[in-house]
Length: 485
Figure (cartoon, helix red, strand yellow):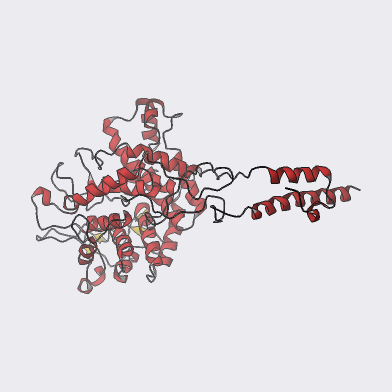
């Protein structure tokens, strides 16, 4: 195609030849490479997908751990990895609602766990299932029925458990309240009372306490509890729940979330990692995964990137895995676990911790907020774009899946019926939601293309950009020569 005269006048022969070459050559648009943390997240998810059996993840003793299975679903949903496994897991969780949120399988009827019910509500919503008919249960209605009413005083808005017997203080905590806020926001109207109760768990410093109760009973707020222990994991969950609440129009949620994110930054170690509280104060991938996810949700991109780097340093690869190279993609709970695995492989005794750590850690690598999992397209590793067109989106791989990390299962989570009898001393859980459906059909623009149409787009704009770039180079060359003389 000959160049228009107005473009060639005054240009040298070499420049004209260069322009002709640019215009005559086929146009190739290459997708930008995926960020390293996205690739690491998908590698972790791929490893975890292989740990599922018939749609569930096992616990240390039981063949199915429904809390961990839900956490695994969250991780899979955050990365978009392995739709068949997500679908199978969602179906299995739906079949075992009462196995998870009650003690029916143990023969103790009349008990419904509030935190587990709220987590199921979130899971069903994030999975694209109908939360009003999940395994035959209306989880939204059930969750709302477990929210303390006006007669509860300063406990109004708290997610609670229902029981026919006097079981002492309610075991629900900030994790449970965060899931209640997330699940209700995702499934319909969000009662302001549930948000207000969560905000009252925040101390003036910005961090959130794990438990609303003391030895003397429920305390009205975090600031009114002497010596309240602020917890990184609980704060990360609360920040994400409050961001979702703010999007839903809840009063006071946005300010509390920003303040919580600011406190998280003060708790970050020099290497980007985080520790929890109590027995998890040392740097670990569970706390780092949740905190990194919350920081990304709050727009603290640099701090989230530092957390992601710390998580990647705990990940096994084919090159660094040593005796555990066959488990490439898995993420260790801490450096001691990583070192031991490299020397001895991941033993059967340790595998449960690796499943839990990987599931939670990859949330800080994928950096999709809990409030957006299942709504936004998961981050993908883009494929090269065919010559002449730009691919609107890379298709997600179907060879992997993650599951929440090596932290703990919800304090109020009932044990699996195949394990020991129910106990009231459980540790806080950091699970994320499941999503069984395939990734949303929304088609994002290819990375680096700024949302331009990619199919059937006119080529004129690309040519003009090329010409302007070359023309600008010529102008700079002429100006440079003038300065030299």
